[in-house]
Image: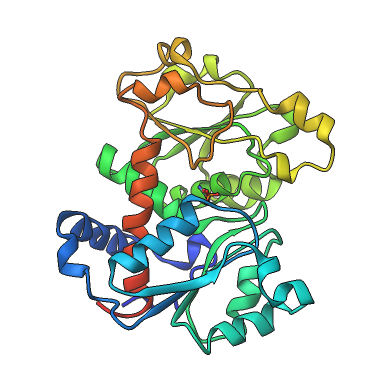
Length: 307
Ligand code: CP
């Protein structure tokens, strides 16, 4: 059983604990029926203060496929949040009804605050531009399944690396495995925050380079992790309009990439991956979305202490 009761930051689990989650996810993929009643009688609460398709649906599908039930909101104004209820009061109340909770919130740190007010496991489903640890579990499981390892890889992260919480979490997580190298592809205005450079990459002597053009570096990559330029994180619409189409991956650019490079994207996409790339066997983003459900099934089982 995992020592950590909550998952707020990707570093809350040790590498060994993550491996346990991935192995369990593999067992679930191979034999889903074996797990179809393991959460009978358990309830998952989904508290989504921001929109979501994959994270909320995959958590709900995960709990339903484990035999449990779900309740929650996808729109905070349909709850007493609209009357001004605090995060601490909301989570204490939800803990009266549910066994485990998932929270997405636009404010960085909100799920951590929630976790401080309850013994019920709380999972961060994305907090502002900060972290998205279950997306990272999804990404790592996909990389591990396709590449057979989580070390010795060159990972290109492309797009909005400033506000892109999935990239922040992924860099943190992959920095714990040996001999990984990062290529950070972004416009000047959307570079990775200094805290990731200083406290994660430089501090751990992880090799990295910055690039502005993906064409210059595509041939060096094992993984290309595309991200959306997120309109909702910009204060100024003009800046968003100027930067939104900085990178568009299409079949011509894919010709520059190695035959065994894989393309990941946390989704949703807007324009950054042309639909024509979907037919390329190196496009793994929908498989990645499916893996998100399996790894969340494993996470729920672990956090509830059921294996
Ligand atoms: N990847 C991801 O977080 O997608 P959603 O915003 O649809 O949940």
